[in-house]
Amino acid sequence: MFIDKIDEFSKRNKVVIGFELGQVYAQISYCRADQSVPDTFSMVMGEEQYDIPVLLSRRLESDGRASWLIGGDAAQSVKDGKGQLADNFVGLAEKKEKVRIGDDEYDAGELLETYIRKTLSLLSAHIRQEDIGAIAFTMDEMRPALMQAIRSAMENIPPKKAELYFMSREDCFFQYMIHQPQEMWIHDVLLYDYTKAGIRSYILQMNRNTNPVACFIETADFPQMKMPNISGMGNDERAKLYKRLDAGLLEMARGYCEERVVTSAFLLGGYFSKDWCRESLRYLCRGCRVFQGNNLFSKGACYGARERLLPSTLSNEYVYLSDDKLRANIGMKCDKGQEEIYFPILNAGTSWYDVDKEFDVMLVKNNTLSLTITPIDGSRTRVANISLEGLSVRGNKTNRIGIRFYMKDTQAVWIEIKDKGFGELFPSTGKLWRECLPVEVIS
Image 1 (cartoon, rainbow, N blue to C red):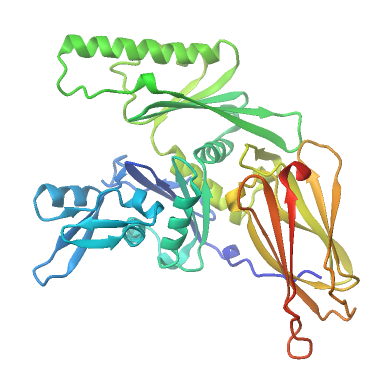
Image 2 (cartoon, helix red, strand yellow; image 1 turned 45 degrees about the vertical axis):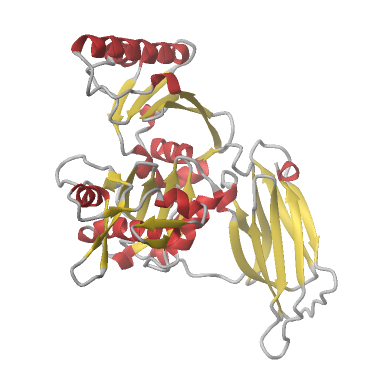
């Protein structure tokens, strides 16, 4: 018998947030449950200034207290000589190290908490704190230590009941695209993300012969496209640089588009400019629709957070698969009242770092749990039986156990089962069982 839990997000007007935490800039997009397209916070109202510098500074007030500034305000306070910069607080929080500011040392994790708290507070004019149902973070790389640092920071940031998710850039791209008009992604979709390190390409492909449709994303890095500092260049030198970059982007686009059908192309980042990518843009526009912007990832994280809490039909029809994701659905059959139901536990397409689910069940017939494993590739459904040795089942619905599914890495799903007893009549025996399902067995 499955013990139901109340889904609080079903209340109207709850908000989800997509928080892009980059190495240089952050962005926050937000969306209500009944809102079709997310909004992105802009530093200047009415303009598309979405980037919030990942900067934190300490300013000492006249009474000796320290106040903290973020983003452009932090940079300005340092420039004015009134603030002191907290160097690399995100990287040091990931390493659980200290940050020295003047003669003082601060825990980098606490500074990360301060930055996230103050960044989220920028939304106070648009949403109420208590309406936030979930926050999805996306970063350049999904590093476990950084994700744990963010989890620790969020423990002290209201609202405490908000769900916390993590999404890769690829996940965000996938979620953003499937929420666009379908004519934009009938065939492959190409994305070029231009950062200080160069261009990273993302190519979204779909296998429409599977059910659900299996989606894949290929990535590649092009460091040779790194944009140098052009402030000191003369006109001739700048023209030569632009011509080289245009030729490089054109070669990249041709290398892919001449072999496949591309429906849409996205150019992200401020380094893209009509000043230099004229020929490459002309080529792309001949074969597909081209879009330029820089808030796709934070919007995609927003869409993804909402799909986790309020799954739409898209979640059943399309699944993004990668090496970080489960390739099978895992569930179990349970008695609910007088009928037997299938209770989904883990869904195919779930990233390993998001696998952490707990729930309680009542054992009624025996001390064996039967898990149903359904691979996404259409191969046969399998059953994995877990025997709780040493546990006597009374048969009167008084054997309550707690079950936790989690993953430490991409290699295996771990299952932890605890005997919870049943009140004072049948106290817990304290027994604990652990099982491991290797990913190659599940897939």
